[in-house]
Amino acid sequence: MKGIRISGFRPVLTGMLLTTLWWLAACSGIEDGPGREDFSEQGRGVFILNEGNYNSGNASLSFYNPQERSVQNGIFLRANDRKLGDTGQSITLRNGTAFIAVENSGIVWGIDAETFRVKGQLTAPETEHMINPRYIHFLSNEKAYVTDLYSPYITIFNPTTFQYLGSISTGRPTLYGYCSTEQMVECAGLVFTNCWCYSDVILVIDPAQDAVVDSIRLHTSMQPKSMVRDRRDRLWVITDGGYETDEDSFGENIPHLYCIDPVSRTILSDQALDTDEGNVQLATNQQADTLYVINNDIFRMGIDESHLPVRPFIQAPRDSKGRRHKLYGLSVDPRNGDLYVADAVDYAQSGVIYRYSASGKLLDNFRVGINPNSFAFK
Image (cartoon, rainbow, N blue to C red; front, side, top):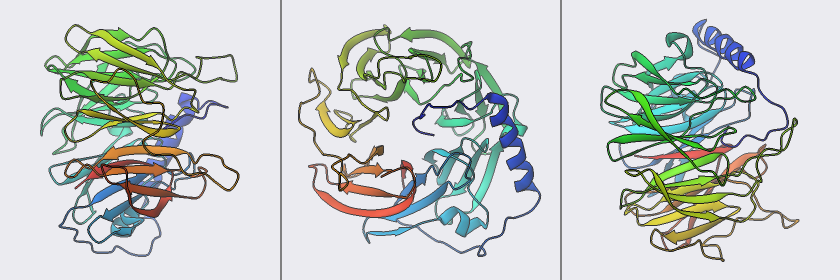
């Protein structure tokens, strides 16, 4: 659920019940499938996580070989003869293992990056507070954090053994059933995480204490959605501005782009952007001196520039009626600067991945699963 389309809310108890039922079903036996396939992807490549549709259990994983310009879809099911789960949220690669947070199934998978076989997992019933895992951040080979959509806690686990180690109380209130922490960025020896749903706060975590030690309020906009660190160790944050809910109006739906000093914890700049439908995203190039921003189209800005340019770097594709496709994910290959853009199209059909060079030239495009949202580079 990369961007909440808020017309009806998902109560916490419903999410917990679905998580428990899914896990019990998964433990009762291997689901029907075509049989486990053998893979051996030893070269470079890109994992693409496809979120699927909420409550449909159709999240999936794709793998793309940029040298051969070939894609393999549904690799988790094919390699393990079981489904990935419901609502794939994020994927992160470390030490030959791809870690996948599957939000509504309440599970973090660890799969071998060459064989795609499951190496381990962390599930909600095994932990004290994890409900709907969102993002994973590694402090070391023995400690990682997992943020959560519903829980006012951040889960701590060992990414080598998948052992649950504890949790960090965020102290945040629950609003409309949500109490989210999202992406995590490490700066100045601290971990910063954005509180997305109905919030305007960035939390500051001391990893030595495993505790929240401070917070930063954004004041001028709501719902910090995406964060990155630049080469000067500054924190960049983009908000989606909020949504109109069933209950009342929340936010102005105007994204803002902030630059924050992580040491003084002060806001250095604040730019109001054009009105957007909610799915803003932020990424940097491999040198961390250039920002890429999804705000309807894709914009590019140097970290020392004062404002996003008026004209987009890359325009979003349009349908036959001239309506923009829903750009849903954005990442940069750290080796060559190629830009990968995920297009959800209409949130129902197979999504499309566009691969661009650092200069904006289209190099390739291909179909993947439903609602592709994140990438991990092998």
